[in-house]
Length: 160
Image (cartoon, rainbow, N blue to C red; front, side, top):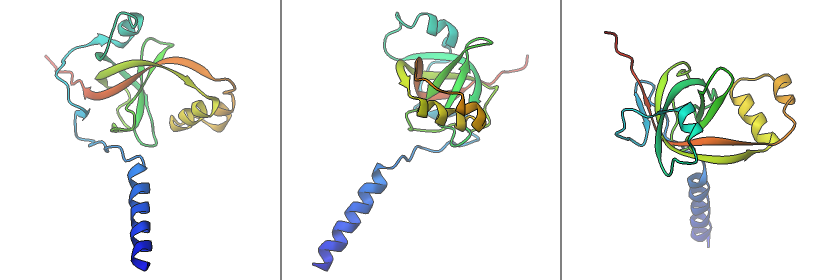
């Protein structure tokens, strides 16, 4: 009977551990994160967003990282213009370095529509380093178009 209890406890612990989120950590010296892809160019994030209805399946987009999740590096925003950002997540499959704000990237994945609850918005705002006063201003759910990335490449700018 003791062996059965130990066996059951061990299975329970392994099952619990296996269900936890263990995204692949980012190697801060890498220029590629997540699944590799061969595209070396892509639509600008703003252009892709304006044609999202005609883009089917996976697409590669390019842009400049505006801000990154400072907790884990599990999402970032791409700048679309001076007032708009595109939320990019990795479905907890990998992370990126938390210091890549301002870097140019290629992102391979697909667009999806999401409704963010007040709690989710507050969580994301806190991850981005917003103050409690700023997160307290969030009062209503928000529907937005986001991007789920399967892979991210840093674009290195070569000097002539």
